[in-house]
Image (cartoon, rainbow, N blue to C red; front, side, top):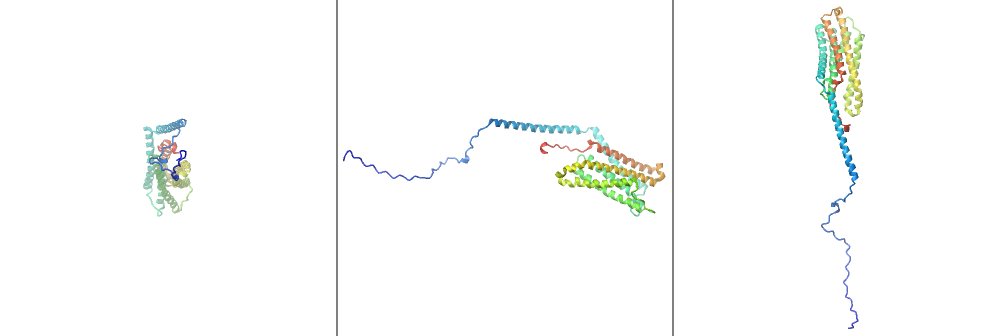
Length: 322
């Protein structure tokens, strides 16, 4: 063989076809969801501002709490009663209660002892005896206690006092109605001739008193009980009616006392005649009833004008709740 001849190249193996499938990840590789979040850069300025705002907020809350405590202490100091205040309160409340019940008891004693008790239309003169007793019971005793409830019931919830106030006024309504019918029947059925109605000062004052009493009851019932169903929407309206209702309530009570005193005088003059000037036993009883009613007007007016006797609940309202 020739030495310069080239040996033939060996035959190459066929090239493998390219595999297009991606390689499988190793088993220990974590999914992207389980990786920790990338580190964030912390802004020191924002961190300081946040700390300052938190401290200011804490200081503001502490100041609010201190103001509430100070207001509570100031309220307690201003409204704390001593022995003298409690003695005054107890004295006038007990005195008013005695006069309210005593005036009714004296009226009953006067009618039963000196005018032979009560009757109905078969005896018009005895039917008249229902008039003074029932009018004193309704307009003075029941109405007086209903007014004083806001000073007597100092430990009860406001809604309960309102309900009791309404109940006492409701008890006065049948007394006034029957007493009014009794005096009309006794005048119209009187023999030998009927007695005229609504001619005296007593009857005029009584008629005005009944009108104001009816208006007070209707307005009070709808404003302070029925409208409580929409307490939030009617709060401002009911608050504006409170001083008006209280003023006209006291006015009605004073007019009732004026009507009772003039009625007692009228009855004493007609039934006693010349004996009234001699101050016999019945005259003294009639004058005692009148003076107890006048004393009652003074005591009730004093109790109502004393702002210290007004019920005030110890309620602290936070500014965040307003």
